Length: 374
Image (cartoon, rainbow, N blue to C red; front, side):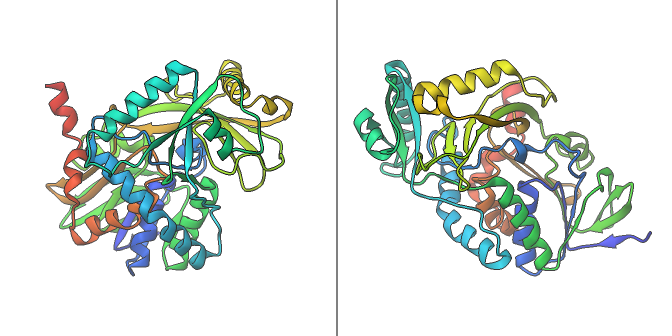
């Protein structure tokens, strides 16, 4: 079994890695994606499918800017993917709602949005609020629960099918001459003479550039590249109902109707280590919140429930890191793999391939955690 080479090797086959691989392959670079396979913890499995701008970035203005750019790029990104692969990712961009159950929740949301807005230039953070009657106007096909008093709204928000997105990214890599190698978990990583070597049980791979985007499997690999990348697992649970009549024309935080007619309900934020099992207590809490917002949902049958592990940093903001001595290794970790797919496939590729490092990446360096510790 000989050594195989590529211009760029991606370690991790979820959403972040293939987005980068797709962008690199579109530029004519040879790409190989090395992936553990479906036995890996897949953050994409727990993904709600939101392309979301509002509510993100408190305490880190750079993340507001990054998600804003991602949302702006998404329409062209989705269109290009469908044109090249024939796979529709069911992207909608008609805005999104964050529902507020009770006056205290609405007041807290106003404070949160107001604090984020104060971090950026006037007029740049276009998130507003709808009162109860305006929410009803946005959702005319369903009756609101008594406790639903209002919502925040951003026209930049939307959603897509995250599993179709992952499939389209993989297909896009293959159509541009790249390769996907499942059952190729990277066991060791070494560097010599300007070349990174990835060792797997099924072969050895060499490249001048390697992108480590293996989610919860990052810690050991990044250490071999001289990078410190702290990773935190967070469990998210989701419920899915039977197919229903059209009820929700726009997505909401915790409720969205898919293109197929099912309704997704969620999500939880649980710190339980690497436990991706479902729990009846979480299912009950999710269902209760959904029925409180929209009593009609109580009549629908639940057909599926699942849990998955999100990949987070300690402060929940991204890490984009590059090795310095030796160079050529990159570590990528971020929540919001769907939202950021558009920039990971474009701006991130320009950084890795051309050295065009966005100024805002200073905020995403892993040494920010060293400062906090000190």
